[in-house]
Length: 328
Image 1 (cartoon, rainbow, N blue to C red):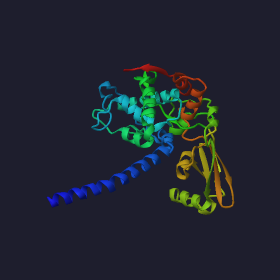
Image 2: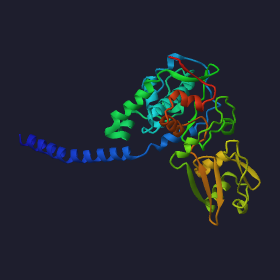
Image 3: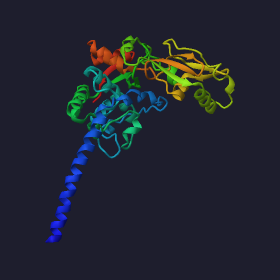
Image 4: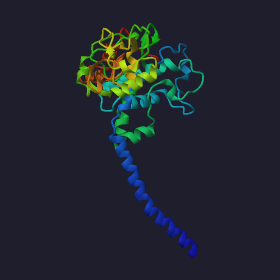
């Protein structure tokens, strides 16, 4: 009997100590997640280099099972993508445009899949229910329903060109005009053309300067291109050609043309639309926009929605000659 009383006393004491600690830990973590901006959503498609890996065959029976052993319905998967790819503060019509773009991008890639795959293999950011709860905290229900409504209001709708789902690439913020696909991936897509997006100039940090020390530039370049003369790296560093939309195509260093996308990757620049300023100790890169610049601008979509554009108008603006079709 005394043994049972002792054990029960230890149990009560543990509960008294553990519960407050757990509560403080949970709500502190929850607040931290909720207060962090969803910046990761802005560059996901920018990291996709999949245009040479198109999947052509169609298999509608696979639509309902696209994540490994989780059996997440396709539209619920799109909810998770939109929750990760676009800030929740954006207008509903912008979220609908994002849902259609995300659905089209995924639909094109799972047509020939013969077995369930992890959502990571599709190439879009994805947040699970638990991740969204952690990120949004007490606002989860409101925010989740906002995204779910945008997704289910466009259920089954994708973008088509010449009776094929398009490569529905998108980015955070253009440089005031979008870029053509061939200048990014070396492949011409008739629906990815340069279009006006001056509304992006209102986006946060539209113009942004990144200062890179000369020593870091020399070290980074020499590791990638060991044949280059370190002593002339900075003095010979100059912008080469630009596209018609104003994005830098290449940079000249020691007589060698380096793809501007490589420069952007090596030095973490926000876009390839940049100018340079050399100082005694560094090179200052001033960029416009954020992302590769092709397809739909997410901030542009949001500004268009604020001005009264529907999701259909947004998509028809950013993707040339496409049609919106309900495929299921």
